[in-house]
Amino acid sequence: MSSVTLDHVHKRFGKAKGVEDVHIHIESGEFFTFLGPSGCGKTTTLRMIAGFYYPTEGRISFGSQDVTMLPPNKRNTGMVFQNYALFPHMTVFENIAFGLQVRKMAKADIKERVERIMKLVRLDGYGERRIDQLSGGQQQRVALARALVIEPQILLLDEPLSNLDAKLREETRYEIKRLQMELGITTIYVTHDQAEAMSMSDRIMVMNSGVVQQIGTPHEIYHRPVNRFVASFIGETNLWEATVTGIEGQNVYVQVTPDISLCGSLQQASPQVRLAVGEKVALSIRPEAVRESAGADGENVVRGTVALAEFTGACVNYVTSVGPHQLRSMFINEGSAVKQPGEAISLHIPKNSIYFAG
Image (cartoon, rainbow, N blue to C red; front, side, top):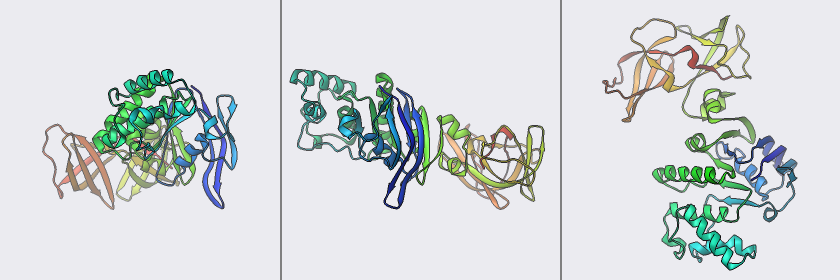
């Protein structure tokens, strides 16, 4: 297995910027995800690591080896594409064995290795089936087995679950993570799905418009977003504009509207935020942090009217009109009656749940 380093990598397509100044180090054996909306540069970055694109500027290294200008077949990476790119005229065994045959391995060695990897991805017994006889999830596992059977230093996955239905997607992401942990292989995963990124990754790189926004663990990305884009892209959040009115010790006092004043903590702020009296700031408040208040008064208690109530079984989601703002909240279902649109509600926003996102 190998570490991967991108040293100030840029990619331009003519005058158009694809990726700008990506500087990351991915540890050997790490599950690292590129996350962002369509067109943000995540697949372009992955294709540069694979060797399908060469950087316009910067260097790419696998361990101590500079691979910046090496062709794909010299990089010892395994890649799973979004559309799987399987050969329809070949059997499952032949698809998985293809890379080994290109490497001119002995037939006995190919048979042993393919059978071992088929068992690992739970496809033993499927070797003679044609690709069109497989379900979408089984095809995905064939593509994964074909990438793994060559024993690559680095596994690259480009939105491999996007063609699967929701239940199968959840099952398959567990299988991918299980395999990655079992093999200890360095894995770089591209997705726009936040749930995939949060549940599978050791670390995440969030991108937008070709620029890296933040790199961190799922917990860091979710709870300490560095800017408004990350706060709004990762999960649900309430983003409110406010003005700092006072700072006393660790307490930061802000005015959202003439009728809504809140108190937050200095410790709950992005490094990019300047907290000073008179400064405009963005508040990120996660729905699950909001609590229903028994009383209508008190610090960080806001009063409003239920605009939308959504019962999902496990929880109840509310959208509450609070003056000119809307506040999303999520409560675990404990059997209590669900408030209906038009009902009054008082909500408490805990001080440490207010994050100053810049």
